[in-house]
Length: 330
Ligand code: BMA
Image (cartoon, rainbow, N blue to C red; front, side, top):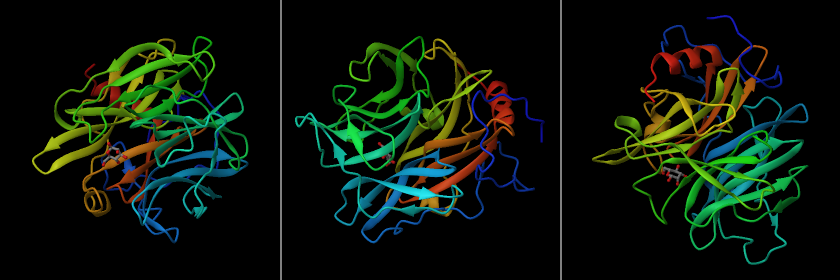
């Protein structure tokens, strides 16, 4: 294992969930041996719990989970954990306070991300407003949530905030989409002075062949490093049996994050074990959150598996960056 180079620009996280790479594993990203960490029925009414977010909070961890209920509507639920692995999920969905009745509350919400910016927490998710778009809510305590204006016109999915303002403005990655199971998708960058008005849209990355052939979308909150923003993302291949979702990574310029410095050519993790290949939607690995420990360079990545359960994967940031650079095609 290479020595940590203090690559991560961010706090230490001594209680980051962690398991060493198995001796027989050659991959740069490896799965937690006790996956899935959250079963589909972790709360009484859930059909499935997947594509979910986790963030350090008050010495432990706070999560926002996508729980599809047994009527098959998707809702967002909070959850807490002392170790980032064993979670207690609130059986009641989040109720958003929305001053603007035109936009909320919406009948469904899915694929949440959670981001801390200047001491405030923001949840972004795929929200309904005449089709999918990106909802945003602000919270301090994960009990009351102030829902803000939707960021974009429909249709859009995967709204991922940067953890600090860039050039004085809030910044977000997203993937414009259609109303259904979008057969296209590229990653764009947008900024806002106030979390209300979004603009200066820039293209970041387009699809290419293979595992990222039909659509790509941003995953966890980007991680600031001395080598650029580490953006973990999902890429989708169209097979004769449907979509296959895998995980990749790219490094983006620190001040102009729409400029891609490096982009992995091979995938980092693709659906290959039972709980990723079998479930409500087979063959899905869908990352939505990552924890980082600057002291050791450890990363823990939370991902939805087969649209049914939550898995955890690990990597060392220096090894990951070396891999992305050595296997890059921009
Ligand atoms: C995407 C999103 C995700 C889902 C994935 C695979 O378009 O809807 O929530 O995990 O499809 O079904």
